Length: 152
Image (cartoon, rainbow, N blue to C red):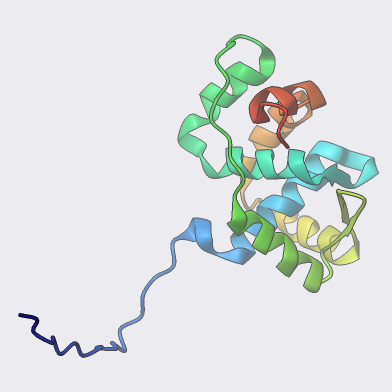
């Protein structure tokens, strides 16, 4: 015996807050900071390295662990994964002309330079800037291979 259930969808007008880590503008800012601080004059980063840096920046509670790995004090490889929300933010950043993608590298262009200038001048995301300044260059190609198991 089967009974049909009447299910009625209820749509609420109450706003639903999107967590900060899912907001594209926040991730775009992390992308811009990563490129500007880690690459300096070159103004580009490998997309794989960028994904790892953004992954690390989002997980502030694990910064000590990441730093220990990057400087070589710990041989334990921390968990890092592909984050589709970061790639979606990259798409938005390209569409808004903050960055351009060429040959697997993300280049900072005029709009991105202007956004970085605003973030820097107004001391926005200062903890992230400090983390990148101290540790960003330590994410070498070898460390990228270790973190991804050579998959990325």
